[in-house]
Length: 396
Image 1 (cartoon, helix red, strand yellow):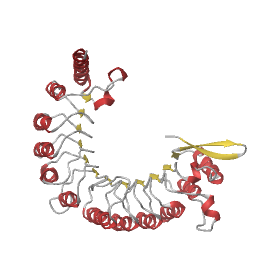
Image 2 (cartoon, rainbow, N blue to C red):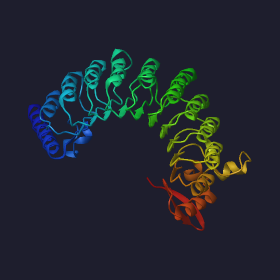
Image 3 (cartoon, rainbow, N blue to C red):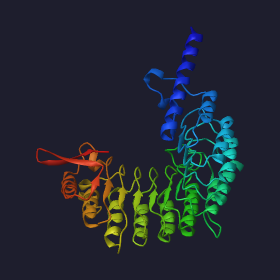
Image 4 (tube, rainbow, N blue to C red):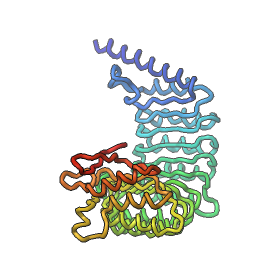
């Protein structure tokens, strides 16, 4: 019976592989993301080494995207992937998120990447590689690679030395100028929702500050889940104030409070290109929101389009009535979006003022309703009225 089951699984997976290859021939896209790629009737099946080799050997000449996230891809398959990168001139996106690749596999791909000019996106997110020669090779490949624009190396258990390598490659006279999007979420080994030592987070912030000061071509940067506090946010803000190229900054899921938000707000008054600021799952509270909004109102030519302050302990009128500040954070943000032409979207869900039992800021909800009804501004909430009181529902 077990042998029959095994044979059935092999025939099923063979069909899945063949179907994926045929789809790739028609569309130029092959996406087979581990178990999530299989329907309910094939739950529990996964790709084997032979399946992956069959996939790679069966790829059409014109393949634009290859996504094998969370599959059994390991170092053994990386030689084939490296060969694909070396000879294929159409592959633009390679996603290996959450695979079993280790340092040896990264090394093989990095060596092939140096001479490649067509690959635009590369993701190793969640591959537990750590730091060492492989990561150094990956960073070094960016010195000769002139095609890659997006690199995701978040949650790879890197250390400060790895961050230093990428900072060096992206700064200086011979810096890489083609990379536009760098994602370094949780760059140092540690529980993702518990901060590391503050000194470690501050060291990370120092490297990011230097990167922002010396690099003017990077447009998007993500540094989530690394334990940044107000001190780290202030250090990053110093570099941001001198930067003229960054358009999107994601510092979500850290420990940034009101003081850190005020430091970032100060940088916004001088930064001339930032379009997206993501601060979800921090602790900036009403005071932090008011500081950021005040900076946008004071800026000569604000460029910010998206502000995400969801899940930041914003209390709204509850905080206002305690005398800690002069305005409800939610209401003030909505009014700012109405007055600042560039700000067209904000996110506030997950705050007590919006979704907390017994703490709803009905006055702010009404302001949000008025602003959204005017058009030109969108949010992650939808206003609705019950018994004369305005409330907000989540709307993705």
